[in-house]
Image (cartoon, rainbow, N blue to C red):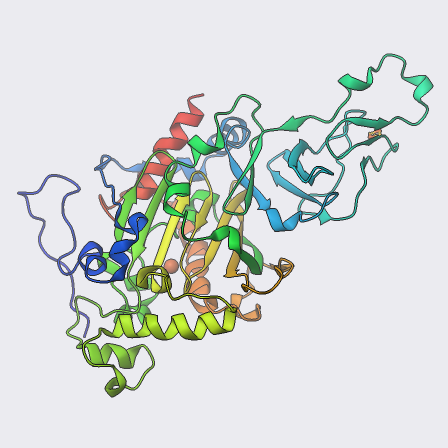
Length: 454
Ligand code: FES
Ligand SMILES: [Fe+2]
């Protein structure tokens, strides 16, 4: 039986200092090869206050409009993967609110982003979410003006009618762009800070985790019933595992998940999977059984978790055609989620290789896009990125072929109808967050305030 973790509050501790009793993530990792992974051993938590977070930040149209005006046009956001535009002339359209960017790879192989709006009479060059290849130039579908792939003007039909246009002043509007981990980032603000600064610890932590050497094996797109922050925040804590994903309790360390806030933009949770629950009396053989093996087959002197990681290194390495022998146990097995403000999450794990982002489509709806990134085989070419599978609001992730985490994602997303209804029905002013387990939510709102303050 699950041991209930309901210790009385310890008044000798300062706010935010209390932790779930039992083995911590740091305890576990420091006793295995994961201790050699500097990104994993880095940790950072600070108490950020315990005031309620107003529900109006989710349910008010005025607040939503403020975000549309002050957040999305000014913040770095991932537009697509580099592999979505592999050749000169390939393009990908990224939209948020009324802002739209067309990401294009030029003849010089450089990836640029332009405002997706014709300088003539404003026609969008391509539709939201569309992509394509083989263009030699960007031609407007309305009157046929065209631009080179670097954004300089190529041709104006009936040039005689536009003597007031100077070619060099009639290029496409380029917006800041950059790449990290195989992702192309854009920013609609010409005066934004650098992408490098924005990414904080991400490049350093991920330098050995190789997201750029992975390919999009599955890509889903699903509309969710709720404000984008509400839906995303359901993925920023593991506190909900107890009630929402109870089947995971026997082989995870949910209540002992570590939460880190590394800066304004980057936070992380690190949940040990494929291990015993520190609150259940399981011996290593039993845990090995829970992981799907015969309990007696656990090799002498090794933990179930390490044996499982070693088995997966071999099996998954063979299946992917890559050498996983140097991948730490934690990266092999754990649920490790980095959140990048405002809307993206990156998991470096091999067993849990998720990437996702949330984009608002209205006050009470958002789109959740998930990518499963898998390693590119060492002796092979990068497979083309998976086509997007569009799911309607009520569709199950089980309809997506090969989507191993479908059951878990269905449990998460089924919560949102009720949470959105309850947030709107509430007569309480705001939500009350846990000091530790929900600190990433608080950090998100704090950074959001800085954007809204202009
Ligand atoms: S609107 Fe683009 S060519 Fe006229
Ligand atoms: Fe969940």
